[in-house]
Image 1: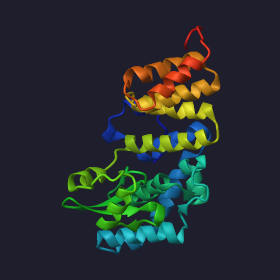
Image 2: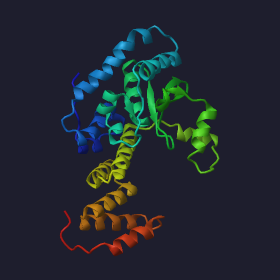
Image 3: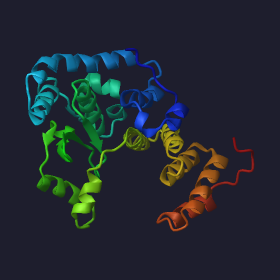
Image 4: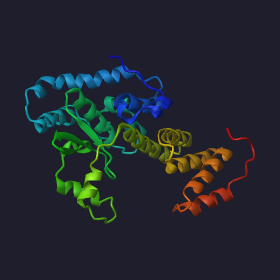
Length: 279
């Protein structure tokens, strides 16, 4: 079946339940690599699934099926952490497939796509600080996994320890834990991928690409005021003063109690006044 990439406007207007994970994450990569071979990416994922099909079909236990998939991907095929965590290509799926290296969310996408092709329901979890996945075991049970560390299954104690590192001392009550482990829709996965990519471009001072990532986030989530601020700051770095002022003033209006409000206000006071037309 041929894979086509939807444009950003089409994605934004698509109901969350209908978002295609592979096409959406390749849409992100196509911003930087407009000529990427999407069919080759789909074929590579299918080849992984085909290599596993006989073994997985012979196993009755869902956790053991998943263990076979993880062993194949993370041991036999060598998928794992990239040496440079913040390299932009760790977010571009075709590069991850070629190099077998990526960040947590990209490795999770590979795992989810291969598992889906083998009939296993694996979803993403936008866990604080570290993207995870989970296998649906039925009857409200799940098997949490860490694709960044070989698909290692996570027990309750390990999940609590991971959460504690990012919750600032907040008690991890049962209700909060349930919320943290909720499946992340594809729109949310793409937004997190875009935030990661934006961070990579920011570290490189690639302000046009920072602005592009923030712009994509705003298209998918118009209420994302952090992306609005970040796009404004990128425009300021690029010298697009009218656009920067528009975004940053809008940010302050929508977030009057923002912790960085005074800093943003100071930037606006110090920025040259531009009275030209904003496009």
